Length: 206
Image 1 (cartoon, helix red, strand yellow):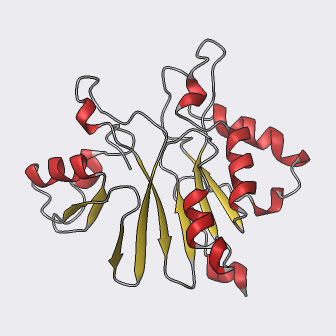
Image 2 (cartoon, helix red, strand yellow):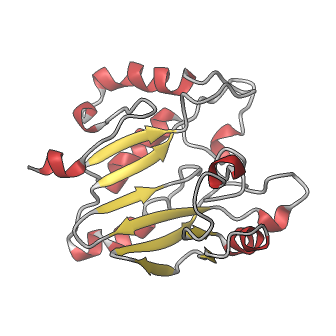
């Protein structure tokens, strides 16, 4: 989705075949090709590509995505809609909550009387001393708000539980979400997956 190290991990990429398809903002895709990933393809906001039976559509995320601070030409950040026409998944990458956050789903699914199956949304913990946090990130409250606007069947929150950050501990965000769920009307549709766990949407639809 963007160039930050927690979303573009070269250690992780080295575990994958070099010819695996990678879709990224155009400047990042060009960078990956130069680094030896020839199947990297640029996908700008509004563009779609068919990979097997999955149509992948990009939209702009509200997030400063450059990696090193001085590489602002790599600052684009994407969100993606993955759609097989029978199953759909919205992957937000990193983004703030804005009035446009649900536009792609609205235009491509809701307009055709289809409902989004899965929303993968990041959750972050906003420390009191960082008031600008929500300009580029979702808090757990923001994620629940966006989940409602997307009208997805299920929400899987991510961006927690892997490492401590300078702004928060690894489980601060998910702990906050767990505190909110008892009072949340659709708590049964929020699926919290520990690292290594899986969620089979087909089983849920039976």
